[in-house]
Image 1 (cartoon, helix red, strand yellow):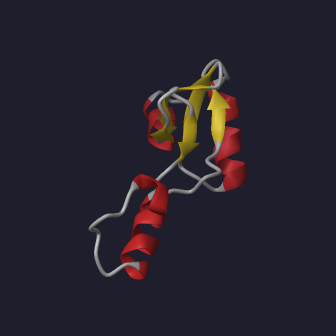
Image 2 (tube, rainbow, N blue to C red):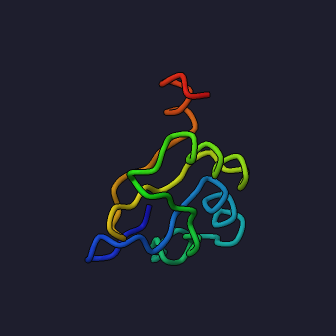
Image 3 (tube, one colour):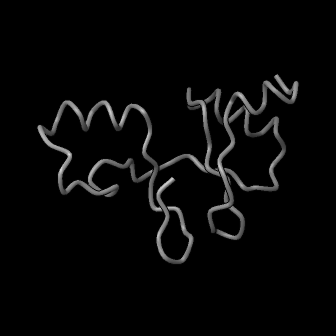
Length: 88
């Protein structure tokens, strides 16, 4: 997750973003997170049910969501977290 000084989510850097960055740039020198991040990450409220997180992941064909609380970064939930807890 990429967050600003106010702890608000401004983007996400996924493995796909890194692959695209490596294809696009010859050098990593001078690149910032803002240069390679996706600016519309999928988020979920930290108080949402795990089943809701799984549904959102399935619908969007993604494996992680950024959890937010009061519009601030709270953490990341990964598909493996749901599997480990026996939710899926």
